Length: 499
Image (cartoon, rainbow, N blue to C red; front, side):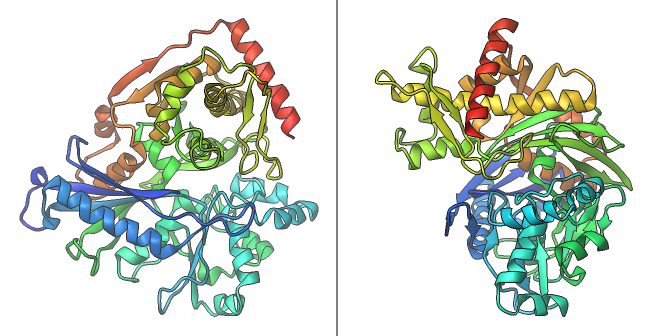
C-alpha cells in the first residue's frame, strides 16, 4: 500500500448503473469527498429490447474516476482500494483475446427472451430452476440472455464451446477491464442472478447450464464479496496495483450500505426500478408469494440470504413523463407538479412499461394510464405516477411479510428518487411503515466502498460499519387503516385491468 497511512488514504467506489455510472470517493468515516455521475446512451432497437454499448459503459467509468479524483483533490497514490457495484442481470459476452464485445450488452430490462422462457416453462423446467437458484424463468435474468446471444450471433456458440468467449455481468466486465484483461471473476451475489448458480452451494450448476445450452467454459470464477479480486493495470488516472477488493450487485450493495446484515433488515432502492431486499439470515427462504430468493452477502465462508422483489419501472416512469410525454422538463420537477394537486383526481397509473415484475412475473403486461377526464391536469398524472411507484412496492412488501412470517415496522430507503419527500410520504402512507432515509442516499456505491474497505482492513468488521449509518429523515404514516385499505383495493382493481 506504499508509505501513505490509511488515515490519509481513501476508498473509490464505482456504481455502474442502468443509465449512468456514479463514482464516489470516501474517507474512513464514510464521508463523501466527491461524487461524479456520467450518463451514457440507452438503445432500444425493437419494442421490449434494451441494449448498452460496452465501450460507452467503460468510458463513463473512466470519466467518472478521473473527475472524482480531481474533485476530491487527492492523488492516485491515495486510493487504498476500489469497490465495484453494478446493474446486475445485464449480460455481456466478449472475446478473451481482443476484449471486443461479441454483441452489445443486453440490459436486465430487456424482454426479448420471453418466448424462450415460455418454452422452458412448458417443458417443465421452472420448478427445477426455482429450487436450485431461487429465481423464476423470466427474461429478467442473465441465463436466457446468454442463450440468445449464442443463438443469434454468427459463430458465437462454436467459439464459446472452445472457450474463446467470456461471459460476465457488468461486475466481471469492469474487473476484466480494470485488471488489463487478467482476471475473469464474478462475485457470488451477481452469480446468483444468472439462473446458472446453485444457491445453497454457490457454484455453477452443470445441469442448469446444460438445459440453457450455456458452455461452462465461458463462465467466470465465483468469489466472495470481500477479498482481493485483482489489481489495477494500465488504467488512466489510477496507479497500477490498486486492489479491487469489494464487489456486489447493486441491490445487495445497497442493503449492505444500509447496514442490512441482520435478520429482518429491509431496504428499498428507488432507482430506474425499485428493488426491495429483506435479509433472511443464514438460511435461504423460498418464496411462495412471487418473490425471488437471492444471496445477500458472502464473506469468510459464511453466506446470508435475502428475499427480493423488484418492480422494473420506478424512476424510469418519471423519465418517461419527461422524455416521452414531455409533461416535465427535468425529473426533479415531478415533486412540485404532483404537489400542485390534492389528490390524483381519479387517475390511476400502473408503471408496467417493461412488464410486471414481482410478485406477478408477467412480462407481457404493459403500462396502464386510466381514469382520465376533461378535468385531468398534468399534476394528476404526476401524482398518479408517484402513487403507482409506491403501490407496486406495497404489493412486494405484503408478500414478503407472508414469506418470512414476521411483521415489519420500518423500511430503509435509498436511491435517487428517495430524495423526493412526497414520494417517501406516499410510500409510508400506503405501506403503513416508518421510512428512514440515510444521510447518504447513494448507499449502493457506499456498500461497495464498505466491502472494498473490509477487503484491505480499512474497516475492521461489520460492527464498525453499522455504526457509520446515520438517519437523515423519518417519514411516519398518516393514513388510517381504512383509508389505506381503500387505496390498495383501488390499485389492485387497476392491476387486474392491466393484466
